[in-house]
Image (cartoon, rainbow, N blue to C red; front, side, top):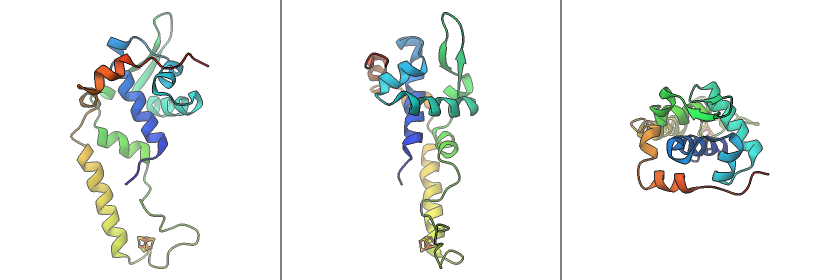
Length: 147
Ligand code: SF4
């Protein structure tokens, strides 16, 4: 199974913000630079994460993005499900739709495999993802100067 680029960007943002006590307050532009991704793409991921209640933006001098308490403890499986949406791994209902779609054992097997993939991520929290060795690397990421 392959995650969308959007999900990957959102997870990168979450991991970076999970170490913000050590790396300092971050804006969307700083997160994008640290993760070496285009600002516009990161901005869309940040907006989605805000809607999910995983992070919030603080205004003012010491403002910036930060994880919410529920966001820090969020299950990675839950988060990936939300970011990926309800789509199946195969486009059975595509154009043209597959003639087997109403009675396909493979389709059900793939649905089961997809759920098993998500379930394997359920026990992990966002906080778990930034344990060593990932956390120290995240703290050291500075990125290119903002565009
Ligand atoms: S063969 Fe089954 S899994 Fe593949 S596209 Fe058709 S319905 Fe979907």
